[in-house]
Amino acid sequence: MCNTRFEGKTAVVTGAARGIGYQCARQLAAGGATVVLVDVLEDALRQAADKLQAECGRAALTCAADVTDEAAVEKLLDEAAEKTGRLDILINNAGITRDDLLLRMDARMWDLVMAVNLKGTFLMTKHAARHMLRQRYGRIVNLASVSGLVGNPGQANYSASKAGVVGFTRTVARELAKRGITCNAVAPGFIKTDMTDVLPEKAKEMALAAIPMQRMGTAEEVARVVAFLASDEAAYVTGHVLPVDGGMAP
Ligand code: NAI
Image (tube, rainbow, N blue to C red; front, side, top):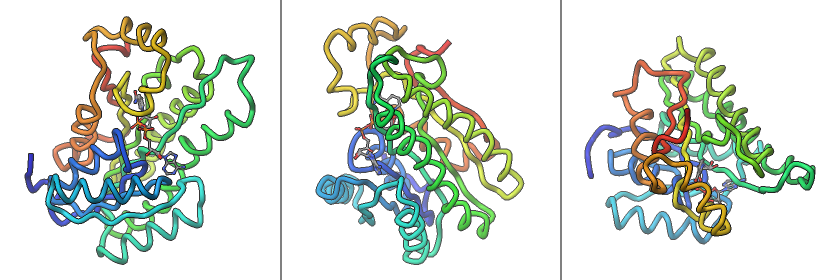
């Protein structure tokens, strides 16, 4: 798995303590990047850093921070750039669900999902872009979702936040393109992680029935596509949303 495609680069991954975020960090570290793992789960973050060291032989920096807290976001990105001398790659992966049908959906659950999935992506991107603009180089990859492309009953808040991530991605791509910074998104379908493990069996069966490949994806399968978009192999790709979904998206 080890290669040198991210040698000399600094990469920040949010929601990196587990799931897709951890696998993204692993792909980047295996390519030689210095990775900064960001998450709200402090213990899981430390364990993730130990695991990354064992699997890739590279020490990662960790930062316990909430992506909705602007002061914390600014501080962590400044510190990452100061400690490593650069800031090349940002993976906006932190995300949550608070599912319910429209009429039962509490406005607080709407706000919470919007805050983490959409505002968190905005804050991280805004403050990372300052460093990337100075370098005239950057790779930003956002985690959208098939729910944000086609909708999903019970996920009005989540699908709206992810559709927001798509519009945000396309706009940032256009704003920053001439400064050597790309911004793309992946839209995973139904991926086996802690986020989907908690779904009721019936919901899992319905989701599986909608997947042409008839299986859930793995976090690693998503992370490999994220790593491609973060690499120089995708240097001329910006403003795109790539589904990683076993054929679910139309
Ligand atoms: P997960 O729940 O396993 O991991 C998400 C991570 O984000 C957790 O470690 C969590 O502590 C962290 N996080 C949550 N709120 C945070 C905050 N405010 N600040 C910093 N970190 C925070 O989820 P999973 O499945 O790995 O999902 C990763 C991303 O992929 C999310 O954006 C999710 O919406 C997206 N996605 C996942 C799909 C799936 O089927 N698992 C499908 C489509 C998109």
